[in-house]
Image (tube, rainbow, N blue to C red; front, side, top):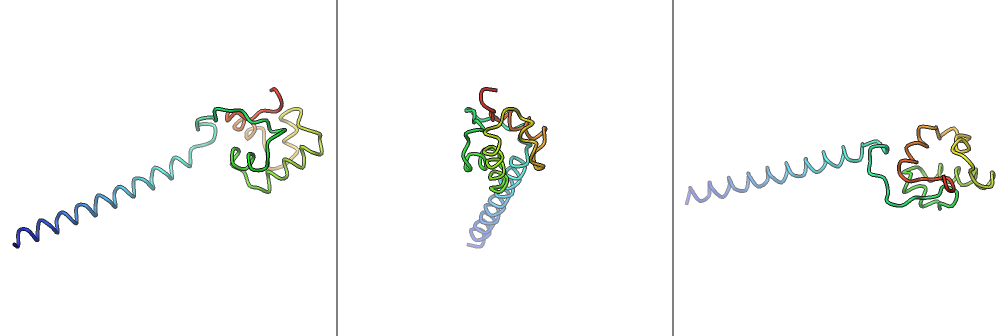
Length: 112
């Protein structure tokens, strides 16, 4: 009986250790996967035209705040649409480097 209890306790301890290790591995993987720069992540299969993208598309696909997405839409409306990537850089929050990352994700201006 003592041996059975010892084996049972050992099995429980090993299984708990395994579950904790598995959970730590998942958190570790999740942290580093979400830290990969946009330029290195797999681009979307479809292209999104920034001149017709909705607020939801801008925030989810570009991974930007709703405030920045609203600024992009306001500037787009003011200019009557973006003609070239430099138009976007009128917003201080957007740089040419960011545009290059977005372009690699399939974001376009008209038929660029």
